[in-house]
Structure formats: structure tokens, C-alpha cells
Length: 392
Image (cartoon, helix red, strand yellow):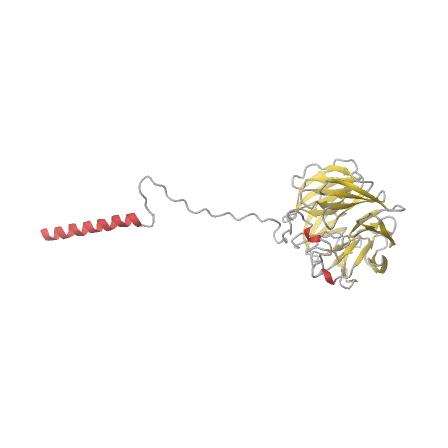
């Protein structure tokens, strides 16, 4: 019995030593008194997406138009015929101009009251917006041939979300923003609006929202792109305001909204969506077009037959070009090389070609009745946001 007790005591002592050794080396599970446990490594939070999901990232965060340099045509656009497509609202036709000769080479019969010729997001189709005919006529820019019209109600104007997910129809008389499949044009969502005459728009640099002008009630809307929902609305501080074209500045900080009754551009902080200030340009301020070097913006003053030139770096108007014999310069676009500004003469059944270096009128071309949103095609850029050509 005494022998057993000694052996048991020895075994117990050995076990205690093993346990104590384990407590000291157990991978840091227990620590010396008075010390702190090491904090687990911080898990980095995923960074917020820089822009609208699916949107091609901007090439230059300081210039939203960086992809629009002279003749920087995409591989797809290089196959297109160089043409100017002019929708004649009063004639239900599209006049096709050869920009090399300044002559109409074809007249295409389309639906009732065509308003704008709009490049699709993928740039492969030109859509003629037959507003009162409630159809879109597709034109193949490779051949210049028109296809079978697609039924779309009240397509006054047409845009595309920056990720190419939706077409956005500006249904002016229906008082709706209609989000549609960009290929089939099937309706996906309808966003009713309380303003009158939704017509023009442009997107923020990150693509997450866009600003819309309401011509007949003198209002502006701010729309969330992903939610497809109006998130802001304001009345312009001018009695009888009639906002028209919308364009964002190259640095993405400012929106400009032409106003044909206030005779100038509204200068808006899109993020804050506070009350904009008015910059007078000329009677009947209507269309806004950015130069190929992103330094200037051409502003058509329909009511006085002139074009004002706004300098972005200087933040001021620097020039005004007057059309000889007057005219009614309306909507249009800049040539692929940036050397010519093309504008429709809304009330004069003609189109103007203007030298962007000198402001000299290069040609005055007779077309159909009521020429409106003409498209110069092709143009540089990776994709189209719509209207007569907003490329990024």
C-alpha cells in the first residue's frame, strides 16, 4: 500500500506538469496576467462602386468626354457611312446629307412627326422618333437603309442608361419617363411625372442619376438611374421658363440647361440640385454641343440666328457667331473631326454647316419642313446616351 501511494503521487505530479506546460503554449489561448489579447485583423470594407453598375468606367475622371476626341471612332463605327440625318417634323421624312458635298442625297419616308434621330447605346442603330406616329424607325448606319418601324407610344425623345441596360423614352405628352428594353423596346417600367413636356436629359459622370428638362412647365427633374425613379424636382426661377437641351460639363461638376424663353443657360449643381443661376447667351437658347477637345460648348440661339461659344476653362462666353441672312439654328451635332457644327434650321426648312474654328457658315442646305433633331454620324465615343448623339 505505501508503494502504491508513492507511485500514484508521482503520476499525479507528472500530469500536473504536463497540464501546466500545455497552458503556457496553447497557441496564445491563455495569456500572462496583465496583458491584452491581440485584436483580430481588420477586414477591409468593400469600396463603393465608382459608378453605375455595368457602366464602362470613364477614361479620365477629369473629363467625361475623353472618349470623344477627333476621329476616335470605335471599331464598330468605322464601318458606318458618313452622313447627316435630318428629321423633318412637318414632312414626315428624313433628309440624308452627304457631308462631303453638302447635298441631300436621299429622302426617307418615316412616321408622323419625326422629332430626333437617335444613336442606340451600342451605336449600331439610328432610331427615328416618330412622335405622333407612335413608332421608332430603325436606320442601319452601315447601309443607310430604314427598317420596319417599332411601336412605341409618344417617343418625343430617346435616351439610354450609361450601362446600356435600358432605353428611356421621353414621353412628353403622356407625362412619363418610360424605361424600355434597348433592343426590343418592350416596356419595363413607367415613371409618371407631374411636370409637363419632359424632353431632354444628360447623366452625371458616375451615371447614377440624370437631369431632365420639362419644357412646358419650366421645371427640372433629378432621376435615380438604378431605381428608375424621380428623386428631385424644382421649378426654375423665371416666369415662363422653357428649358430645352441639357449637357454636363467635362469635369462632371455642372449641368447646363438651355432655356428658349429665359434666353440663356441655367447653371446647375447636379449633386446638390439647388436653385440654378442663369447665364444669358442669346434669344431662344436651345441646343448645347461640346467641342472635340472638351474646351468649348456651342450654344444655338434659335430666336436670333446665332451660336454662342462657352469656354469651359475660362467659365465664360467668349464668342458669338451670327448666321448670314439670319436663321433658326436648333438641334444638331459636331462632325467626327470636330471641324464642323451641324444645326437644323427649325423654321426655315434648311440645315447649317458652321466652321468651328472661325464661325463661318460653310453651307446652307434646303431640306424638308420643320427640320429638328439631326444626327451627324458616325461620331467618336464608346457608347451613346441618346438624343442626337451624347457619346462617352
